[in-house]
Length: 192
Ligand code: URA
Image (cartoon, rainbow, N blue to C red; front, side, top):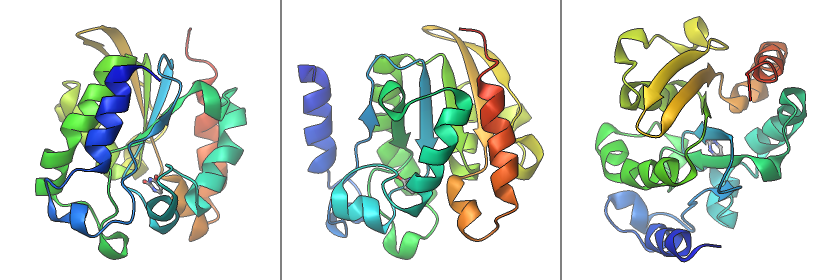
């Protein structure tokens, strides 16, 4: 692993910039291919991720693992990160102060990886990324904009952003699985 990213991960693992830092078992910096074309961004670690320090390794992760092949993707060729690197208590929603404090880590990862495609899992990732990439005016709830592709120019080139339902929805609404599957299949059509 490049020294820069090792240092970043160490910083994240010892971060105490917000109160979540003293509640976690493990911070979850994110993992995957550091030259990935496609980056997935979730919300925050859950219980399994907090235990292991690995993103999407619990129930939502199993759903994601089932969906990736539909997009023609393998887990090792994408990067998987989160808006928050530490688990909020009882998996509550991220607070805006936490998002503000934590997202410089994600921004560093995006600037390093320079993904051409950013898949935002759920409302929090969608709102944060669309704002960051100059698409604030296009933000709507995930039910309205899932599966749409937003194209924008960023400092390192053209970026495509696709909001998706968070894979965890499948654990309480099985009907969302076919919607997620349809959206993931669409990712295959994005030009390389
Ligand atoms: N949900 C998320 O948003 N991220 C994870 O890493 C796991 C579950």
